[in-house]
Image (cartoon, rainbow over all chains, first blue to last red; front, side, top):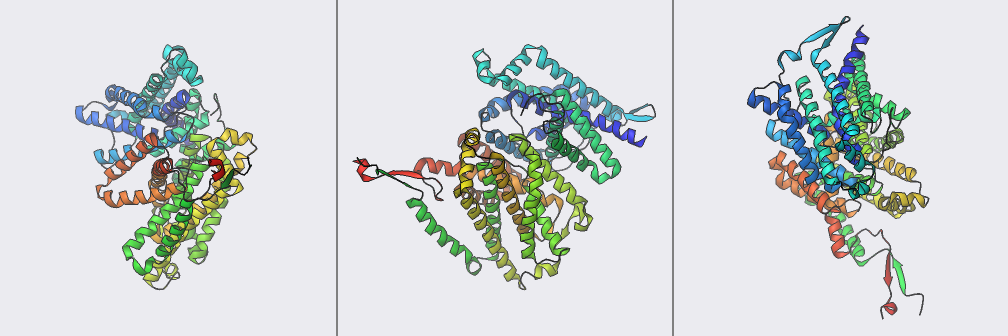
Length: 287
Length: 341
C-alpha cells in the first residue's frame, strides 16, 4: 500500500511539474526559444502572489486574478522589448540573454524579498484531505493536478481550435510565409510569451502554496520542467503531462527508497529516457 | 603579368609585437612572488583560474557550438577528486590534480554520448542536469562529508611546501601555469587540422558537414578535452580553498555564470576575448563588489546589452575597427607591390 501511495502522490506531483513545463513547451513550439529564465519567472509568479496576498489579505488562489494578467503583460513586453531581438539562426543570443535575465531576476528577488524562504498561507486547503480506497489524498495536490489537466486541455484547445492558435502554428511552421500572409510575427511571439507566462503564474502560485521558495529556487524548477518536456517528447502537450507524472513518480518512489534519493531518482529517470528514447516517449516535432 | 602577385601569410606585425609583449608580461608575472604582496597574488591567482575556465568554455561555446551551462559539473568533480585521491589514495596533491584531469576526461565520455542527443539549447539545460546529478551524488557520499562537505587535512597541505609563503607562491604559479596551458591548448588545437574543422563548424555547421567534417566526433573531442582540463582547474581551485562542499563545488553562479559573462563581454569565438573579458570582469568586481547584489544585476544587464548590441564583444569591436589579431589563426592574402601598381 505504501508503494501505491507513493505512486499516486508522485502522479499528483507530476501535475505541478507539467505546469512548470507547459510554458516552456509552448514557447519552444511557437518560436524555438529555450528560456533559461523560465524557472525564475515561475518564482517571480510566486513572489508576485506573495506580494498580493500580503497587501490585500486575499486567499493565494484568488491572487491569481491579479498575478495572471500581470505576468502575461510582463511576458508580452519582455518578448517584444528584448527576446524578439535575439531570435534567429544562431542559438547563442537567446540562450545567453535569458541566462543573463535569470541572474538579474534572482538578484532582484534577493534585493526585494531577502534570501529567507517564503511561503503563501492557503489556510485549510493546505492540510485538507479526502480518503479514496484507503489512500489519503491531499486536496491541494488533487486540485493542482486538476488545474494542470485543465490548463493543458485549454492550451490544446487554443492551439488547434482558435484563430490565435492558427497563427501560432503558422509562425511555428514557417515564419516568412506567415508574414507574407499578413501575420505580424513579433506580435504573435509576444502573445505566445504572454500566454506562456500566464500559465507560469499559475504554476508559481501553486508552487508557493505547496512549498517554501527562495530567490534561487528557479534553477531546479527550470530543470524539472525541461525534463518533463523531454521525457514527454518535444511539441506534445499531453506528452508533457505524462513526462511530468513520470518525473513525479520517480521522485516519490526514490524518496521512498531513501530520502536522499528523491531528486536524484527524478534526474536518473530523465537520463534513462534520454538514453533509450532520445526524442522522448511521444515526440511530435523534431528539435 | 606574373602569377606571383600575392602571398599568403598567417602572422602579422600585430601578432609578432603581441608575442614579444606577451612573453615579457609572462616573465614579469612569473616573478610576481618577488614583487607582489600576498593579497595581490591571491587576486591574480584567482584571475588566472577564471581566465583558464573562460578560455575552455569559449572553446566549447564559441567554436564547437557546445553551449554548456553545466561546466560546474567538472569543476566540482575535479575538486572532489583532489580530496578523494589525496585523502584515500594517498597521492601527492600535484599527482592528484593530474589524476583529477584524467578522471574528468574519462567521465566526460559517457556523459557526452548521452547529452549529445540533445540539440542546441536543450543541450545547454542537459548539461545543467548532469551538474545537478553530480552535486546530488557527491552529497550522498558520506566519506567525503556528504552534504556539509569536508576540509583538506593539514598534512596534505604541508606536503606541498613547508612554509606558508612557499605554498602561496606554488599556488600562484600553478594558477598562472593553468591559464597559460589552457590558452596554449586552445591555440594549438585551433591551429591544427581539427581547429580548421572547428572554425568551419562555428561559421556554418551544415556547410562543414557537407564538406566531410565529422561534426559529432569533432565536438566530442572538444567536449572531452575541455571537461578534463576543467576538472584539473577544479582540483586547483579547491586546493586553494582547502574546503569543499557540494553547494560550493557545483555552484552554477561561480563556475558558469561568471565565466559566461566574461566570455560574452570579452568576445565569444576568439582567443583574445576571454583575456579581455577576465580583465574587465575583475576590474568591475574590484570596484563594484561592495554593492553586493546590485553588482550582479549590473553584470547581467551589461551581458545582455553586449549580446544584443555588440554580439562579438569588446574584442570583436576592436577587430572590426582595426582588423587585428594577436593570436595568428587566420590566413591572410597580401597583395605584392607589383599588383598594387
